[in-house]
Length: 463
Image (tube, rainbow, N blue to C red; front, side, top):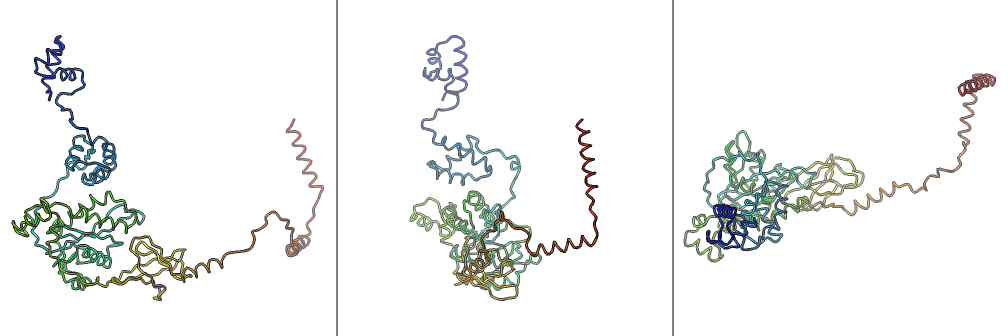
Protein backbone atom coordinates (compact mmCIF):
# COMPACT_ATOMS: atom_id res chain seq x y z
CA UNK A 1 0.00 0.00 0.00
CA UNK A 2 1.35 3.43 -1.03
CA UNK A 3 1.93 5.42 2.16
CA UNK A 4 1.42 9.10 2.80
CA UNK A 5 5.18 9.74 3.15
CA UNK A 6 5.83 8.11 -0.23
CA UNK A 7 3.06 10.18 -1.79
CA UNK A 8 4.57 13.37 -0.34
CA UNK A 9 8.07 12.52 -1.59
CA UNK A 10 6.87 11.50 -5.05
CA UNK A 11 4.96 14.79 -5.41
CA UNK A 12 8.04 16.82 -4.33
CA UNK A 13 10.36 14.97 -6.72
CA UNK A 14 7.92 15.48 -9.58
CA UNK A 15 7.90 19.21 -8.86
CA UNK A 16 11.69 19.14 -9.05
CA UNK A 17 11.52 17.72 -12.57
CA UNK A 18 12.08 14.05 -11.94
CA UNK A 19 10.54 11.62 -14.39
CA UNK A 20 8.03 9.00 -13.35
CA UNK A 21 10.57 6.22 -14.09
CA UNK A 22 13.20 7.90 -11.91
CA UNK A 23 10.73 8.37 -9.04
CA UNK A 24 9.64 4.71 -9.33
CA UNK A 25 13.28 3.52 -9.18
CA UNK A 26 13.99 5.82 -6.24
CA UNK A 27 10.96 4.63 -4.21
CA UNK A 28 11.09 1.01 -5.38
CA UNK A 29 7.56 1.21 -6.82
CA UNK A 30 5.85 0.38 -10.06
CA UNK A 31 5.63 3.24 -12.58
CA UNK A 32 1.87 2.74 -12.88
CA UNK A 33 1.51 3.13 -9.14
CA UNK A 34 3.48 6.42 -9.17
CA UNK A 35 1.47 7.72 -12.11
CA UNK A 36 -1.91 6.91 -10.51
CA UNK A 37 -1.02 8.69 -7.28
CA UNK A 38 0.40 11.75 -9.05
CA UNK A 39 -2.72 11.97 -11.25
CA UNK A 40 -5.03 11.59 -8.25
CA UNK A 41 -6.68 8.38 -9.44
CA UNK A 42 -5.37 6.55 -6.33
CA UNK A 43 -5.34 7.77 -2.71
CA UNK A 44 -2.43 7.14 -0.37
CA UNK A 45 -3.21 4.97 2.65
CA UNK A 46 -6.22 3.24 1.04
CA UNK A 47 -5.89 -0.15 -0.52
CA UNK A 48 -7.82 -0.78 -3.70
CA UNK A 49 -10.47 -3.47 -3.39
CA UNK A 50 -9.47 -6.81 -4.87
CA UNK A 51 -13.15 -7.84 -5.11
CA UNK A 52 -16.30 -5.94 -6.12
CA UNK A 53 -18.12 -3.91 -3.45
CA UNK A 54 -21.17 -6.06 -2.71
CA UNK A 55 -22.57 -3.58 -0.18
CA UNK A 56 -22.74 -0.53 -2.46
CA UNK A 57 -26.14 -1.40 -3.93
CA UNK A 58 -27.68 -1.64 -0.43
CA UNK A 59 -26.37 1.73 0.78
CA UNK A 60 -29.43 3.80 -0.36
CA UNK A 61 -31.86 1.42 1.35
CA UNK A 62 -29.85 1.26 4.60
CA UNK A 63 -29.39 5.04 4.67
CA UNK A 64 -33.12 5.64 4.15
CA UNK A 65 -34.16 3.10 6.81
CA UNK A 66 -31.79 4.65 9.36
CA UNK A 67 -33.01 8.11 8.44
CA UNK A 68 -36.59 6.94 9.16
CA UNK A 69 -35.58 5.25 12.41
CA UNK A 70 -32.11 6.17 13.73
CA UNK A 71 -32.50 3.68 16.61
CA UNK A 72 -33.34 0.66 14.44
CA UNK A 73 -31.35 -2.34 15.59
CA UNK A 74 -28.59 -3.44 13.22
CA UNK A 75 -29.74 -7.05 13.60
CA UNK A 76 -33.29 -6.11 12.53
CA UNK A 77 -31.95 -4.14 9.58
CA UNK A 78 -29.70 -7.08 8.67
CA UNK A 79 -32.80 -9.31 8.47
CA UNK A 80 -34.29 -6.88 5.94
CA UNK A 81 -31.23 -6.55 3.68
CA UNK A 82 -30.66 -10.31 3.84
CA UNK A 83 -34.17 -10.79 2.46
CA UNK A 84 -33.25 -8.31 -0.30
CA UNK A 85 -30.27 -10.40 -1.42
CA UNK A 86 -27.34 -9.44 0.83
CA UNK A 87 -25.19 -12.57 1.11
CA UNK A 88 -22.36 -11.63 3.46
CA UNK A 89 -22.24 -12.06 7.24
CA UNK A 90 -23.76 -9.91 9.96
CA UNK A 91 -20.28 -8.80 11.04
CA UNK A 92 -19.49 -7.60 7.51
CA UNK A 93 -22.77 -5.74 7.41
CA UNK A 94 -22.20 -3.87 10.68
CA UNK A 95 -18.62 -3.05 9.64
CA UNK A 96 -19.87 -1.46 6.43
CA UNK A 97 -22.52 0.54 8.30
CA UNK A 98 -19.90 1.90 10.71
CA UNK A 99 -17.28 2.60 8.04
CA UNK A 100 -19.72 4.54 5.87
CA UNK A 101 -21.25 6.31 8.91
CA UNK A 102 -24.78 5.52 7.73
CA UNK A 103 -26.42 5.79 11.15
CA UNK A 104 -27.33 9.39 12.06
CA UNK A 105 -25.92 10.82 15.27
CA UNK A 106 -28.35 11.14 18.20
CA UNK A 107 -27.20 13.71 20.72
CA UNK A 108 -29.91 12.76 23.23
CA UNK A 109 -28.55 9.22 23.54
CA UNK A 110 -24.88 10.17 23.76
CA UNK A 111 -24.72 10.59 27.53
CA UNK A 112 -27.06 7.78 28.51
CA UNK A 113 -25.40 5.15 30.66
CA UNK A 114 -26.84 1.92 32.05
CA UNK A 115 -27.06 0.81 35.65
CA UNK A 116 -24.73 -1.69 37.24
CA UNK A 117 -26.08 -5.22 36.88
CA UNK A 118 -25.12 -8.73 37.92
CA UNK A 119 -26.29 -12.09 36.65
CA UNK A 120 -28.48 -14.03 39.09
CA UNK A 121 -28.28 -17.80 38.92
CA UNK A 122 -31.54 -19.58 38.09
CA UNK A 123 -31.82 -23.39 38.11
CA UNK A 124 -33.84 -24.98 35.30
CA UNK A 125 -37.63 -24.62 35.56
CA UNK A 126 -37.24 -22.62 38.77
CA UNK A 127 -39.31 -19.59 37.75
CA UNK A 128 -41.03 -17.73 34.96
CA UNK A 129 -40.78 -13.95 34.94
CA UNK A 130 -43.83 -11.98 33.80
CA UNK A 131 -44.28 -8.40 32.69
CA UNK A 132 -46.59 -6.28 30.57
CA UNK A 133 -45.29 -3.93 27.89
CA UNK A 134 -47.35 -1.18 26.24
CA UNK A 135 -46.30 -0.91 22.60
CA UNK A 136 -47.03 2.50 21.04
CA UNK A 137 -48.74 3.22 17.73
CA UNK A 138 -50.44 -0.12 17.21
CA UNK A 139 -51.86 -0.49 13.65
CA UNK A 140 -55.19 -1.57 15.15
CA UNK A 141 -57.45 0.12 17.69
CA UNK A 142 -57.17 3.67 16.26
CA UNK A 143 -53.46 3.85 16.98
CA UNK A 144 -53.73 3.14 20.71
CA UNK A 145 -51.08 1.20 22.62
CA UNK A 146 -50.97 -2.56 22.19
CA UNK A 147 -50.79 -4.71 25.34
CA UNK A 148 -48.23 -7.53 25.20
CA UNK A 149 -47.57 -9.95 28.06
CA UNK A 150 -44.08 -11.47 28.09
CA UNK A 151 -43.19 -14.67 29.96
CA UNK A 152 -39.47 -15.48 30.12
CA UNK A 153 -37.47 -18.47 31.40
CA UNK A 154 -34.33 -16.97 32.98
CA UNK A 155 -32.31 -20.19 32.83
CA UNK A 156 -32.42 -20.59 29.05
CA UNK A 157 -33.62 -17.13 27.98
CA UNK A 158 -36.56 -18.56 26.06
CA UNK A 159 -39.61 -16.30 26.02
CA UNK A 160 -43.04 -16.12 24.50
CA UNK A 161 -45.57 -13.29 24.26
CA UNK A 162 -49.33 -12.89 24.03
CA UNK A 163 -51.20 -9.83 22.78
CA UNK A 164 -54.28 -8.84 24.76
CA UNK A 165 -57.12 -6.34 24.57
CA UNK A 166 -56.54 -5.09 28.13
CA UNK A 167 -54.48 -5.67 31.27
CA UNK A 168 -57.27 -6.50 33.73
CA UNK A 169 -57.18 -9.76 35.64
CA UNK A 170 -59.29 -11.96 33.29
CA UNK A 171 -57.24 -10.85 30.27
CA UNK A 172 -54.05 -11.40 32.27
CA UNK A 173 -55.08 -14.97 33.10
CA UNK A 174 -55.90 -15.70 29.48
CA UNK A 175 -52.59 -14.22 28.30
CA UNK A 176 -50.63 -16.16 30.93
CA UNK A 177 -52.22 -19.43 29.87
CA UNK A 178 -51.45 -18.67 26.23
CA UNK A 179 -47.80 -17.93 27.01
CA UNK A 180 -47.44 -21.08 29.12
CA UNK A 181 -48.78 -23.28 26.33
CA UNK A 182 -46.41 -21.62 23.87
CA UNK A 183 -43.50 -22.26 26.25
CA UNK A 184 -44.57 -25.88 26.53
CA UNK A 185 -44.87 -26.12 30.32
CA UNK A 186 -44.82 -24.40 33.68
CA UNK A 187 -42.23 -23.49 36.32
CA UNK A 188 -42.35 -23.80 40.10
CA UNK A 189 -43.00 -20.13 40.75
CA UNK A 190 -43.99 -16.94 38.97
CA UNK A 191 -42.09 -13.72 39.53
CA UNK A 192 -43.97 -10.49 38.84
CA UNK A 193 -43.52 -6.83 39.58
CA UNK A 194 -46.10 -4.92 41.62
CA UNK A 195 -49.02 -5.61 39.24
CA UNK A 196 -52.23 -4.63 41.03
CA UNK A 197 -54.05 -7.53 39.35
CA UNK A 198 -51.69 -10.06 41.00
CA UNK A 199 -50.36 -8.54 44.22
CA UNK A 200 -51.25 -5.62 46.44
CA UNK A 201 -48.72 -2.90 45.52
CA UNK A 202 -48.50 -1.71 49.13
CA UNK A 203 -48.25 -4.98 51.04
CA UNK A 204 -46.87 -7.24 48.25
CA UNK A 205 -49.41 -9.90 49.24
CA UNK A 206 -51.14 -11.90 46.52
CA UNK A 207 -54.61 -10.60 45.72
CA UNK A 208 -57.39 -12.86 47.07
CA UNK A 209 -58.89 -13.07 43.59
CA UNK A 210 -55.58 -14.36 42.18
CA UNK A 211 -54.97 -17.03 44.81
CA UNK A 212 -57.29 -19.58 43.07
CA UNK A 213 -55.41 -18.92 39.82
CA UNK A 214 -52.05 -19.75 41.42
CA UNK A 215 -53.55 -22.89 42.98
CA UNK A 216 -55.02 -23.92 39.61
CA UNK A 217 -51.56 -23.83 38.01
CA UNK A 218 -49.75 -25.13 41.10
CA UNK A 219 -47.28 -22.26 41.50
CA UNK A 220 -46.21 -19.75 44.09
CA UNK A 221 -46.19 -16.04 43.24
CA UNK A 222 -43.10 -14.02 44.17
CA UNK A 223 -43.25 -10.21 43.82
CA UNK A 224 -40.17 -8.14 43.06
CA UNK A 225 -38.86 -5.84 45.80
CA UNK A 226 -40.05 -2.25 45.44
CA UNK A 227 -38.07 -0.12 42.97
CA UNK A 228 -36.01 -3.13 41.91
CA UNK A 229 -37.28 -3.69 38.38
CA UNK A 230 -33.98 -5.23 37.26
CA UNK A 231 -34.63 -8.14 39.67
CA UNK A 232 -36.59 -9.72 36.82
CA UNK A 233 -33.89 -8.93 34.29
CA UNK A 234 -34.76 -11.88 32.05
CA UNK A 235 -38.23 -10.50 31.35
CA UNK A 236 -36.86 -6.98 30.87
CA UNK A 237 -34.25 -8.21 28.39
CA UNK A 238 -36.83 -10.26 26.52
CA UNK A 239 -39.03 -7.16 26.24
CA UNK A 240 -36.03 -5.17 25.00
CA UNK A 241 -35.29 -7.82 22.38
CA UNK A 242 -38.91 -8.23 21.27
CA UNK A 243 -39.58 -4.50 20.93
CA UNK A 244 -36.30 -3.65 19.20
CA UNK A 245 -36.08 -6.66 16.90
CA UNK A 246 -39.76 -7.46 16.26
CA UNK A 247 -42.14 -4.58 17.00
CA UNK A 248 -40.19 -1.82 15.23
CA UNK A 249 -40.30 -3.71 11.92
CA UNK A 250 -43.62 -5.57 12.30
CA UNK A 251 -45.92 -5.35 9.27
CA UNK A 252 -49.17 -6.77 10.75
CA UNK A 253 -52.40 -4.77 10.52
CA UNK A 254 -54.51 -6.67 13.07
CA UNK A 255 -53.81 -8.12 16.50
CA UNK A 256 -54.33 -11.66 15.22
CA UNK A 257 -51.76 -11.13 12.46
CA UNK A 258 -49.34 -9.63 14.98
CA UNK A 259 -49.71 -12.70 17.21
CA UNK A 260 -48.93 -15.04 14.31
CA UNK A 261 -45.87 -13.00 13.35
CA UNK A 262 -44.64 -12.91 16.96
CA UNK A 263 -44.96 -16.69 17.31
CA UNK A 264 -42.94 -17.23 14.13
CA UNK A 265 -40.36 -14.65 15.24
CA UNK A 266 -39.84 -16.38 18.58
CA UNK A 267 -39.35 -19.78 16.93
CA UNK A 268 -37.17 -18.73 13.99
CA UNK A 269 -35.09 -15.95 15.56
CA UNK A 270 -35.58 -15.83 19.33
CA UNK A 271 -34.86 -19.53 19.91
CA UNK A 272 -31.83 -19.44 17.57
CA UNK A 273 -29.88 -16.92 19.65
CA UNK A 274 -26.49 -18.36 20.72
CA UNK A 275 -25.69 -18.94 24.37
CA UNK A 276 -22.33 -19.48 26.13
CA UNK A 277 -20.95 -23.01 26.09
CA UNK A 278 -20.36 -22.72 29.83
CA UNK A 279 -24.10 -22.54 30.40
CA UNK A 280 -24.64 -25.88 28.66
CA UNK A 281 -21.70 -27.45 30.50
CA UNK A 282 -23.19 -26.23 33.77
CA UNK A 283 -26.42 -28.07 33.02
CA UNK A 284 -25.03 -31.29 31.51
CA UNK A 285 -21.36 -31.48 32.35
CA UNK A 286 -18.45 -30.99 29.97
CA UNK A 287 -18.48 -34.40 28.28
CA UNK A 288 -22.25 -34.57 27.92
CA UNK A 289 -22.35 -31.00 26.56
CA UNK A 290 -19.83 -31.92 23.86
CA UNK A 291 -21.86 -34.96 22.86
CA UNK A 292 -25.05 -32.85 22.88
CA UNK A 293 -23.59 -30.30 20.50
CA UNK A 294 -21.94 -32.97 18.36
CA UNK A 295 -25.29 -34.52 17.55
CA UNK A 296 -26.61 -31.11 16.49
CA UNK A 297 -23.36 -30.18 14.66
CA UNK A 298 -23.09 -26.83 16.41
CA UNK A 299 -20.21 -24.99 18.00
CA UNK A 300 -22.35 -23.10 20.52
CA UNK A 301 -25.69 -23.93 22.12
CA UNK A 302 -28.78 -21.88 21.38
CA UNK A 303 -31.70 -20.69 23.47
CA UNK A 304 -33.76 -23.55 22.04
CA UNK A 305 -31.13 -26.11 23.11
CA UNK A 306 -31.11 -24.89 26.70
CA UNK A 307 -34.91 -24.71 26.75
CA UNK A 308 -35.07 -28.45 25.98
CA UNK A 309 -33.16 -29.06 29.20
CA UNK A 310 -35.43 -26.90 31.38
CA UNK A 311 -37.69 -29.80 32.34
CA UNK A 312 -40.86 -27.71 32.63
CA UNK A 313 -43.81 -29.05 34.58
CA UNK A 314 -47.01 -30.13 32.78
CA UNK A 315 -49.90 -27.68 32.50
CA UNK A 316 -53.52 -28.11 33.58
CA UNK A 317 -55.84 -29.42 30.91
CA UNK A 318 -57.73 -26.14 30.66
CA UNK A 319 -57.29 -22.48 31.45
CA UNK A 320 -58.53 -21.14 34.78
CA UNK A 321 -62.25 -20.35 34.21
CA UNK A 322 -62.24 -16.59 34.73
CA UNK A 323 -64.85 -14.44 32.99
CA UNK A 324 -64.01 -11.63 30.59
CA UNK A 325 -66.75 -9.01 30.50
CA UNK A 326 -67.05 -5.81 28.47
CA UNK A 327 -69.80 -3.19 28.24
CA UNK A 328 -70.48 -1.73 24.79
CA UNK A 329 -73.26 -0.11 22.75
CA UNK A 330 -75.01 -1.81 19.86
CA UNK A 331 -74.04 -0.17 16.58
CA UNK A 332 -76.33 0.95 13.72
CA UNK A 333 -75.83 -2.43 12.02
CA UNK A 334 -77.02 -4.36 15.05
CA UNK A 335 -73.47 -5.43 15.94
CA UNK A 336 -71.64 -5.23 19.29
CA UNK A 337 -67.83 -4.78 19.33
CA UNK A 338 -65.85 -7.22 21.48
CA UNK A 339 -62.11 -8.06 21.37
CA UNK A 340 -61.59 -6.64 17.90
CA UNK A 341 -64.61 -8.47 16.41
CA UNK A 342 -68.34 -7.68 16.22
CA UNK A 343 -71.32 -9.89 17.13
CA UNK A 344 -75.00 -9.51 16.22
CA UNK A 345 -78.02 -8.98 18.49
CA UNK A 346 -81.75 -9.06 17.66
CA UNK A 347 -83.27 -5.93 16.02
CA UNK A 348 -84.56 -3.19 18.25
CA UNK A 349 -81.40 -2.99 20.39
CA UNK A 350 -79.53 -0.38 18.32
CA UNK A 351 -77.91 2.16 20.64
CA UNK A 352 -78.60 0.11 23.78
CA UNK A 353 -75.88 -0.67 26.33
CA UNK A 354 -75.20 -4.42 26.58
CA UNK A 355 -72.67 -6.69 28.30
CA UNK A 356 -70.55 -9.23 26.43
CA UNK A 357 -69.20 -12.12 28.49
CA UNK A 358 -66.74 -14.90 27.75
CA UNK A 359 -65.88 -17.70 30.15
CA UNK A 360 -62.24 -18.76 29.68
CA UNK A 361 -62.12 -22.36 28.56
CA UNK A 362 -65.44 -22.19 26.72
CA UNK A 363 -65.92 -21.69 22.99
CA UNK A 364 -68.60 -19.02 23.00
CA UNK A 365 -69.67 -15.60 24.20
CA UNK A 366 -72.94 -14.32 25.65
CA UNK A 367 -74.54 -10.93 25.06
CA UNK A 368 -76.75 -9.79 27.94
CA UNK A 369 -78.99 -6.73 28.22
CA UNK A 370 -78.75 -4.16 31.00
CA UNK A 371 -81.61 -5.93 32.80
CA UNK A 372 -79.82 -9.30 32.66
CA UNK A 373 -81.76 -10.89 29.75
CA UNK A 374 -79.72 -13.14 27.46
CA UNK A 375 -79.93 -11.61 23.97
CA UNK A 376 -77.58 -13.80 21.92
CA UNK A 377 -74.88 -16.46 22.04
CA UNK A 378 -72.09 -16.77 19.47
CA UNK A 379 -68.94 -18.74 18.79
CA UNK A 380 -65.96 -16.67 19.91
CA UNK A 381 -63.69 -15.82 16.99
CA UNK A 382 -59.96 -15.15 17.32
CA UNK A 383 -59.52 -11.84 19.17
CA UNK A 384 -58.36 -9.01 16.93
CA UNK A 385 -59.33 -10.81 13.73
CA UNK A 386 -61.85 -8.21 12.56
CA UNK A 387 -64.65 -10.77 12.11
CA UNK A 388 -68.32 -9.75 11.85
CA UNK A 389 -70.36 -12.64 13.32
CA UNK A 390 -74.09 -12.54 12.49
CA UNK A 391 -76.76 -15.01 13.47
CA UNK A 392 -78.88 -15.82 10.35
CA UNK A 393 -82.08 -15.15 12.30
CA UNK A 394 -80.78 -11.74 13.42
CA UNK A 395 -79.76 -10.88 9.88
CA UNK A 396 -83.15 -11.86 8.43
CA UNK A 397 -85.08 -9.94 11.08
CA UNK A 398 -82.92 -6.83 10.59
CA UNK A 399 -83.40 -6.95 6.82
CA UNK A 400 -87.18 -7.27 7.26
CA UNK A 401 -87.27 -4.31 9.64
CA UNK A 402 -85.18 -2.11 7.35
CA UNK A 403 -87.16 -2.97 4.22
CA UNK A 404 -90.45 -2.36 5.98
CA UNK A 405 -89.30 1.15 6.84
CA UNK A 406 -88.56 1.99 3.21
CA UNK A 407 -91.01 4.47 1.43
CA UNK A 408 -92.00 2.90 -1.89
CA UNK A 409 -94.06 5.92 -3.16
CA UNK A 410 -92.83 7.62 -6.37
CA UNK A 411 -90.75 10.76 -5.89
CA UNK A 412 -92.46 14.13 -5.63
CA UNK A 413 -93.26 16.12 -8.82
CA UNK A 414 -91.76 19.52 -8.12
CA UNK A 415 -92.90 21.33 -11.32
CA UNK A 416 -96.60 20.40 -11.42
CA UNK A 417 -99.44 22.95 -11.15
CA UNK A 418 -100.80 23.04 -7.60
CA UNK A 419 -103.31 25.95 -7.09
CA UNK A 420 -104.82 26.52 -3.60
CA UNK A 421 -107.16 23.69 -2.68
CA UNK A 422 -110.56 23.82 -1.05
CA UNK A 423 -109.17 23.78 2.49
CA UNK A 424 -106.69 26.54 1.69
CA UNK A 425 -109.40 28.68 0.06
CA UNK A 426 -111.60 28.22 3.13
CA UNK A 427 -108.82 29.48 5.38
CA UNK A 428 -108.19 32.40 3.02
CA UNK A 429 -111.88 33.35 3.22
CA UNK A 430 -111.63 33.49 7.00
CA UNK A 431 -108.67 35.86 6.74
CA UNK A 432 -110.52 38.10 4.28
CA UNK A 433 -113.55 38.24 6.57
CA UNK A 434 -111.29 39.40 9.33
CA UNK A 435 -109.99 42.25 7.18
CA UNK A 436 -113.55 43.31 6.29
CA UNK A 437 -114.48 43.45 9.97
CA UNK A 438 -111.69 46.00 10.57
CA UNK A 439 -113.20 48.38 7.92
CA UNK A 440 -109.87 48.98 6.22
CA UNK A 441 -110.13 51.89 3.73
CA UNK A 442 -107.88 51.79 0.71
CA UNK A 443 -107.25 55.17 -0.99
CA UNK A 444 -105.97 54.88 -4.55
CA UNK A 445 -105.32 58.58 -4.70
CA UNK A 446 -102.76 58.32 -1.92
CA UNK A 447 -100.94 55.59 -3.79
CA UNK A 448 -100.94 57.71 -6.96
CA UNK A 449 -99.45 60.65 -5.09
CA UNK A 450 -96.59 58.45 -3.81
CA UNK A 451 -95.88 57.23 -7.34
CA UNK A 452 -95.85 60.81 -8.72
CA UNK A 453 -93.37 61.89 -6.04
CA UNK A 454 -91.01 59.01 -6.86
CA UNK A 455 -91.18 59.82 -10.60
CA UNK A 456 -90.43 63.47 -9.95
CA UNK A 457 -87.43 62.66 -7.73
CA UNK A 458 -86.07 60.24 -10.32
CA UNK A 459 -86.33 62.77 -13.15
CA UNK A 460 -84.55 65.45 -11.11
CA UNK A 461 -81.75 63.01 -10.30
CA UNK A 462 -81.22 62.32 -13.98
CA UNK A 463 -80.79 66.02 -14.72
